Image 1 (cartoon, rainbow over the protein chains, first blue to last red):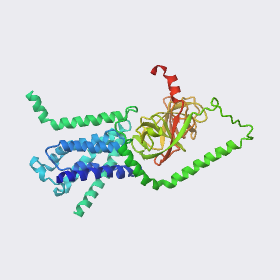
Image 2 (cartoon, one colour; image 1 turned 30 degrees about the horizontal axis):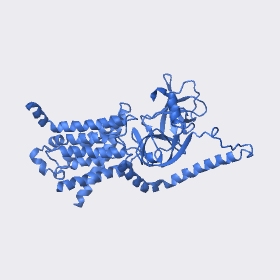
Image 3 (cartoon, rainbow over the protein chains, first blue to last red; image 1 turned 180 degrees about the vertical axis):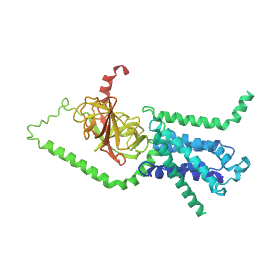
Image 4 (tube, chains in turn brown, cyan; image 1 turned 120 degrees about the vertical axis):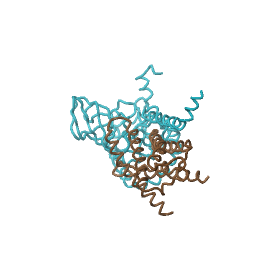
Length: 167
Length: 275
């Protein structure tokens, strides 16, 4: 029950924050942060994954509905949601027994940094390649990925720092 | 059978993941084709309503520029009216209301953009007018400064517009001082510069020439402003012309939707077998 409320509190604020605030940032004219990826980072680890995959898909799809982008957010968010467990295994060296007690705040910052940056870069790269949807202007995909990844990660770490301070 | 069940057991998450990814991919491909893009669209009751409320708030931020635009448009129209009124005697102007002579081709309806984007490779806008206000698909969207896009699909209250800043958008355009025409496309780079293709080499082009819409399509009326030529690039017998738009696509609010009244008749002439 507690977990369901936590997920709901993750889902809707991230959706509306992304759509009404962060999609309108347009730093230097075209750089947007995509902070809704925090949903994948903060969603509790579990062996049973249907609900998590489905909710990630749904969050991406809702953002697509708002921003008229077909299914690009759904596709990229679902992709990082699927590879998350793999990354947790590789970076944090966790096994299935550790999932229940896994907490990002108790992990060393270096590992968390690697984990978050990898997820963000993969997500943004898929997002911008699909938004481009052709091999023309492919260099713009790389530059967009780079700038937006930096922007998103800065916002993410500032955000988590502030939230943690409160607690 | 046992093996099959075992296979599904083992890869069940991957299969679920693959299924959802296929759905997403299907939606993406659909969104990239003009006539099919109706599954994922912000022109629906929920997102349209939310955006409308949001734009009620954010409208205040550019109230000043919108006011100035409106005033300058009024000025232009007032001057036109004055010119028309002062063409001479009322005897010379013939005011016979005759349905044979009187032949209105277009009607304009105002609408407001409640959501817009200009930084993606495929940009769409959402209008607060829909089928119940007479807005259907394939109608022109313009404002006082020039063209904005083409309506693409609508529900009863909201309409999605394919902006000219969309890599799928193709609009018939021509030079103002001659009848050479080409198609207007966007390469996805800068939001205030679009490209004009297929202008014949014979055309006499100069930097600063005005580009307007051509009346040949059944969507845009003739002579709607687009922009001025910024750069001409002649490579391998092809003219690639950069056009600087008159419109600031990053700051749009009030627009007109143009209805072509003879559209059905023209289309039935062009493809008579299509019925």
